Amino acid sequence: MAATRSIELRTSVPGPRSQEILARKREAVAVPLGAIFPIVAAEGHGATLTDVDGNTFIDFTGGVGCLNVGHSHPRVVAAAREQLERFSHTDYTIVPYEPYVELAERLVQRTPIAGPKKAAFFNAGTEAVENAVKFARAYTKRPAVIAFEGGFHGRTLLSLSLTSKTHPYKAGLGPFAPEVYRVPFAQDYRGPDVRTALAALERTLVTQVAAETVAAIVIEPVQGEGGFVVAPPEFMSGVRRVCDDNGIVLVVDEVQTGFGRTGKLFAIEHYDVEPDLITVAKSIAAGLPLSGVLGRAEIMDAPGLNAVGGTYVGNPVAQAAAIAVLEVIDDEGLLERAAAIGETMRTRMLEWQARFAEIGDVRGLGAMLAIELVHDRESKDPAPELVAAVCDEALRDGLLLMSAGIYSNVIRVLVPLTIVDGELDEALEVWERALERVLSA
Ligand code: PLP
Image (cartoon, rainbow, N blue to C red; front, side):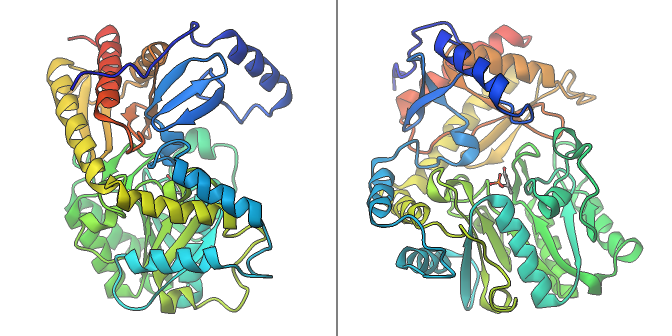
């Protein structure tokens, strides 16, 4: 399949209009709200994003994994518009509405957990995580939570306490929430292996926190911000076993992995493990703010009446969009498409790894794929400056690529799953040229 010509650059990047708005941003917007790309968005369609200078890029960031169905999918736009024209807000806990109930019905029906299930909706991923812990605490009547090294669960107090990257997320922002304990995450590339990681978890229950005081273990099936580290199957099963042995609620955080990214609706479906609760957000509503907790009814029903909620929880416009997202995923076969995109990219990435000494690892699940750059394959010394240089070269040629990883030395792909083959080819060619310019063959 020949590459398309979706990328169109009319000015150098960044163009003058973007620069002008970014100069205003510097004056009016707080410094911590940085921007990875020096361009300003004007409109997005499918897998492309056009900036205010009329430059069109292929977007491999998908708004950090929010756009599995692509930018401005017509069915999502129509559903959101129709709801917006009817009403945009009541506060669900004051006057409820049908889109909330319908989305709950559709999602619990597809949640990979046996028995009665329920849903609750919020706004951001961080709220889903915080509330999942509330459900688990109310159900178990225990305080503690265990999370993993390299994990990312959000930026509000409890979720930031669960998050495991000091710079830029945590440094200087403590004190953090109490009763959070951290253990290693098993991984193939940098270790520890499954046995060592599970032994550390078991030891933590002896040395740091009594098992009977642990409400939940919170885990990502594929660590997103942590660098697309895929939990080995035996690790996930081992964590489930520790939960079962000790009456601990297993919370699987699918905020980044969910809604088809890995080739299944939920990444945990790749494992022989049933979670108790699943947190969702990002691609659930194609970029409109919506998150949720899905899980066992007895856990979801545990907090007292009105013990969870919030003014904006489960916005009806976002929920109408989410119902359309589910329909698009099914009608356009996006789960199969994610697997196919993953195959194409993995093949290409492995070719790159054979060519370029600095590509230490190629990993991921379905279309959630990444390459890790190192100075030396033996020492695995992280190479974040090479990642920055590759992303920079790609940007100048019209491809939006972004980093991940505790050392920021991973380039990850969160491309819309609606990307057509020609565009995917075009993007991979740009990426390859960027690698050729920066890395040593
Ligand atoms: N959990 C995971 C796995 C995430 O990747 C993220 C965000 O990247 C969050 C939680 C937090 O979501 P939000 O940024 O919507 O609060």
